[in-house]
Length: 215
Image 1 (cartoon, rainbow, N blue to C red):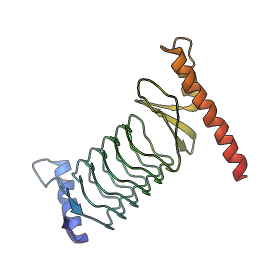
Image 2: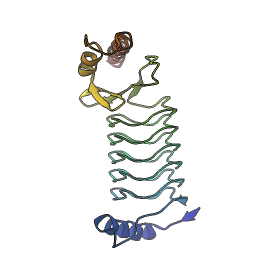
Image 3: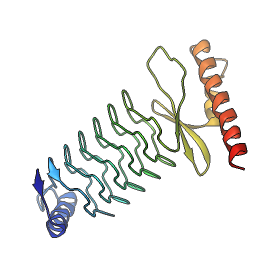
């Protein structure tokens, strides 16, 4: 794996910033397969960059723009990605165990096959994200709703400052809106809708119980 100093990274990011503004100027950041452990990339604009199969363990990427970037197969264990923009990024097969994704934008990202065990996803936006075969065991601020949908959909509840939000396919709904959607008389498959509503009932009951325990 290639290693970079903090100065090297600053130069690469500066050239990448020029490339974003004008594809004929600057150079796209290609850090694929790099050793970036413990690096400080806080607030960096790495939109559309290639960080696939890189080692980013313990790195600080908080507040960074990583939208449309390739982070597939990367090792992000213990990294700080809070408040970052990861929308439309490719994180498939990445290792995000123990990472801080609080308040990050993961909308329309590809997280299939990723390991999110013990990560902090509180307040994150997972609208339209792909989570097939991902492991969310012990992740903070999320709850996987068990509905047994034969179509393979797996709704995820995300805890935000405004209450629980439900990510299901391309939908990003409040609990009230989700309940209205799945219990509508004209819902295409009533018995599946009933399963989703039952899962919402469980979520709300569980939230009340947790609040009582914490009080």
